[in-house]
Length: 79
Image (spheres, rainbow, N blue to C red):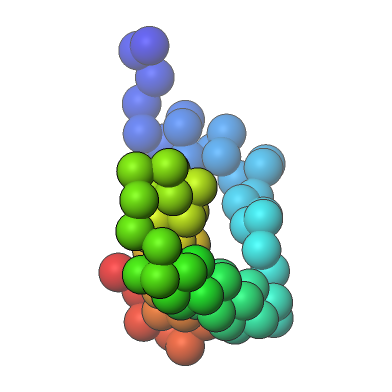
């Protein structure tokens, strides 16, 4: 791997970055993930057991985390 930065820059120009979720759909995806996360968090709050931890709490925290990141990207605040 002895290539210069200029060669890497030239090679990268041939394959532009295309995001999985387009800019026009980020707000909708973020909103759905946040609603899903809050719903799962509420369900976990009603039934706090060891069994519901991997089935409710972990997906809730993941959907809230990803939803917040997409919401920041949708409104133009990049973290």
